[in-house]
Length: 166
Picture 1 (tube, rainbow, N blue to C red):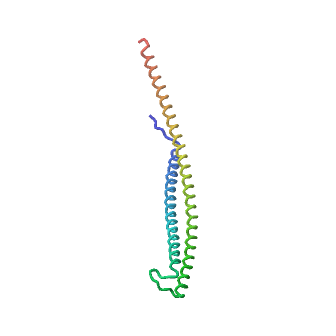
Picture 2 (cartoon, rainbow, N blue to C red):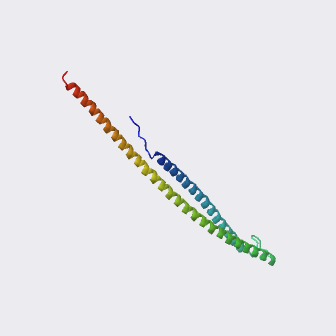
C-alpha cells in the first residue's frame, strides 16, 4: 500500500517553527514587561520614601527631635537647603517614574503585538493542518476505492471462471 505524502509538509513544518518562535517571543516580551513593571514599582517606592523623608524633615525643621534646645540660624538654614535638595530629588524621581511609565506602556504594546503575531502564526498552522488532514482523508478514500475496484475485478474473474463449463 502506498504512503500518503503531503506535498506542503515543508511549509507546514516552517509554519510550526514560526509559531514556536512567536510563542517564545511572547514569553520574552512578557518577561521584559514584568522586569519593567518591577523597575517602575521600585521607582514609585523611591518617590514615596523621598516624599516621606522630606515631610519628616519639614516637621523637624525648627527643632531637634526629642530635645527642647532651639536650633541656631545656621542649622535651620542648612536643614532648609537640604529639604530643597531633597525636593529636587523628589522631582527627579517623579520624572524617572514618568519615563519608566512610558517604557512600561511600550512594553505592553510590544506584548500585545507579539501575542497578535503568535495568534496569526497559530491560525496559519491550523489552516495547513486542516488542509493536510483533508488531503490525507481524500487520499485514503481514493486508495480504498481503488482497492474496492480491484477486489470487485478479482471477484468477477473468480465468478466468471467458476461459471464456465469445463
